[in-house]
Amino acid sequence: MSSKNRTRRTTTRNIRFPNHMIEQINIALEHKGSGNFSAWVIEACRRRLATDATHLLPGQHDK
Image (cartoon, rainbow, N blue to C red):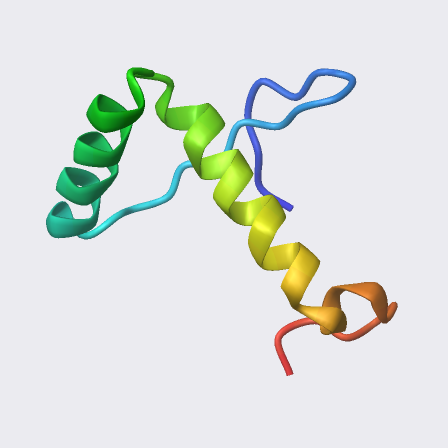
């Protein structure tokens, strides 16, 4: 796994977002009154993992 700045509980990963998605996230953050992009993305990932049962199965990566 490629990563930088690995600490005990977090890992920094660089990802690309489509520009229109960044704009939509920024609008959502403005409406919420919070400017924490990382927290928003982490929460979105948590919600996706909660609805995706395949993450619970060991060895089932990108099939």
